Image (cartoon, rainbow, N blue to C red; front, side, top):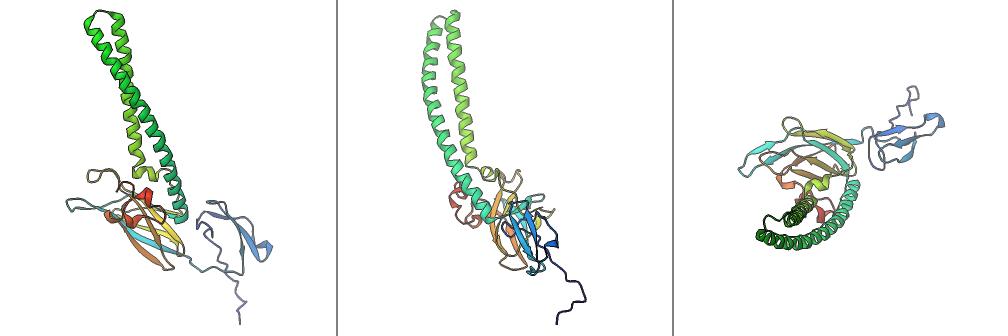
Length: 265
């Protein structure tokens, strides 16, 4: 028989049932009797929480691990102060698909611009060489010198523009491009002095552990990680971010995002 002498403890939800985000608010009291309303500030989801439907006391678990890099000389560096975040895998996949499409469009535009400017540069260089030969025959002619100077500056400017376009093209293939505009995680932390970290995430559902290492003398450019993980109902799971699952490695690739993550490797 149920003991009614003690007030019943109501375990209110701490995460959104849709996106699993922890930024939620209660928008009504229990004055409605059997339920109350909650609102997720992360994905703007509203839901009705029924008092009788008690969730498990602690629906969350932990992802623990460390971040390290082994150099070509075999030296192991444990990376401290690395920001770590856990993003719902569905949200992360949506971001990566969007970046894939965006990158393809930008590459097409860049290649058109580079081709057009390269053709123009060839014509301008030809004209510059012609005017230079003319000027050599009459070096004191100020009009000829001015004409050559105008074309010379145009040639230099075009070369700089093409160099800048090549730099932009290289950026599109970088890991940094993948992380640009990355959605906020439902949990974030930083590695400690020994490279260790702990993230609290729901026991159910799949998430992507995203991390960006520092730029330094033993690795250029910065190492990035994008590792899919799930607690599968367990209390905890350990994940090591290292050379083997750095961004682009097969083991680090969440479903349906292989083309973007493996583009450079």
